[in-house]
Amino acid sequence: MRLVLLGPPGAGKGTQSEAIAATYGIPHISTGDIFRANVKGETPLGKEAKGYMSRGELVPDQVVNRMVADRLRQPDAETGFLLDGYPRTVGQAYTLNGMLAMLDAQLDVVLHFAVPDEELEARIAKRQSEEGRDDDDAAVFQRRMKEYRDQTTDLIPHFREVGLLVDVDAVGTIEEVRARVEAACQQAKGDAAA
Ligand code: AMP
Figure (spheres, rainbow, N blue to C red):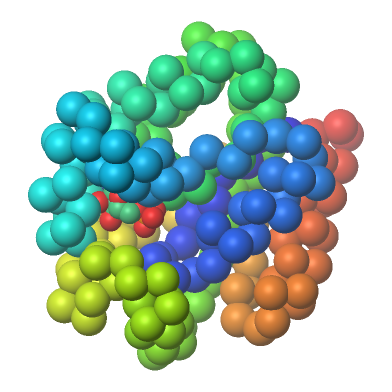
């Protein structure tokens, strides 16, 4: 199973990813988590990404693409993976296409998590008080939303056209959303097998 999770910051992609990855026995590849680990470890990659992240901007495509290409070549990603937070630009989507062709692999489904803006703001305020992520600060969050609208939403019609997109209503309890995600994955698997 090869999936992509697409959605605005605070849509619950990380939370749902854990469950999907466990169900299908595939690695959960979150570019945001990889960047945060590198910032924490003060690696060269972390130093490169840190400024962009703290401003709520996207890290340049070539940096992210290189990182994902390395990750997808790891043995645990051979039979499947869940990409959480990548691709986020049209350029990244094209690059991913090239990587998949090299690996002789195809995506099964792109889940688009839909949540109204007001709900996202409330969720992010809660996450900041609980986890203290710098980029959940209100001003930085607005910037992340702008990046999403300006750069990432173009991927929705793109993946719809190629028949991979499934919209998931991501409002509700974790269990309710998980059930919708599971149904979408089952349908995608069925379609792939047909
Ligand atoms: P996330 O946890 O997915 O919201 O990512 C946190 C931050 O990491 C983002 O605000 C970006 O600065 C950076 N980042 C994560 N994934 C990407 C990506 N695919 N392209 C560019 N920047 C990214």
